[in-house]
Length: 168
Image (cartoon, rainbow, N blue to C red; front, side, top):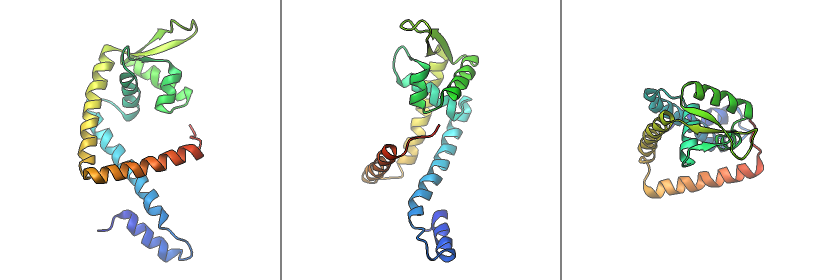
């Protein structure tokens, strides 16, 4: 059975016989999977009133463990955002009552971002829904297939992370 990427590769083979489009099979599929998986996650989060960026910040604080607080810099690095984008997101989540800013006891000029009780509750509901959705997708593989795919993707990510500095 052919997917959309197979069709694109066939078209490129016809149009540019001097170029080898086959490596685009893997890259195209990874990019397409990213879009499809993101759409699934957004659907799972919608009933909870969350967007993907809100989910990322809330669950990063939650998985950090008690007392569910981090410096904006730590949060920015874990969520992989610029400081301007992180500040904007914290401001919006604070207005929603999901996080609060606290003075950092170790730095008079610093602040810590902490999940509120409402934020923690929402993060826990969202992560449970997200894990269920991920299980549904990964159950399409056998355990052996899943392990092979994970290993291959890990190898690719580690190699690219070493050689390409992320741009924010």
